[in-house]
Figure 1 (cartoon, one colour):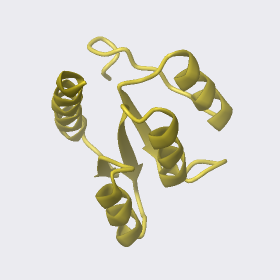
Figure 2 (cartoon, one colour):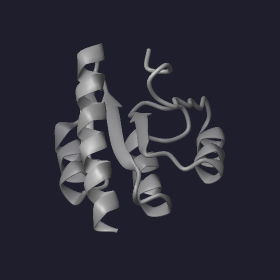
Figure 3 (tube, rainbow, N blue to C red):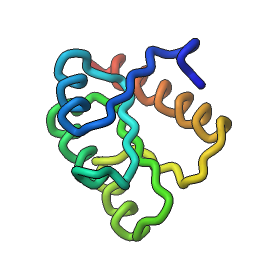
Figure 4 (cartoon, rainbow, N blue to C red):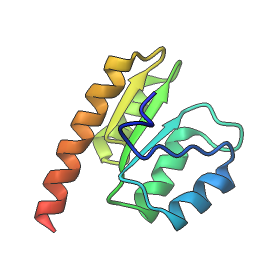
Length: 108
């Protein structure tokens, strides 16, 4: 959906995602909470450590909101988007991430 506007890369396994981020760090990392090998919150926590400048977004269909709120509050996840999401939801997230990235690149 956004491939014409952004450099979109996808991974289907945890090892592929880790390798991809090592080889080509991403400005924005979007993870689903339900993944076969790891929870999205755990993966994004890992990304926060290994790639702290990446804007981290969690997609979720059903989750205990208390856990997500604490992850967002701690800064491990900058935004969560409930499923089903719309194109407008994603565009708003990309705009918000762009502002965040621009602000942090000026600070460094």
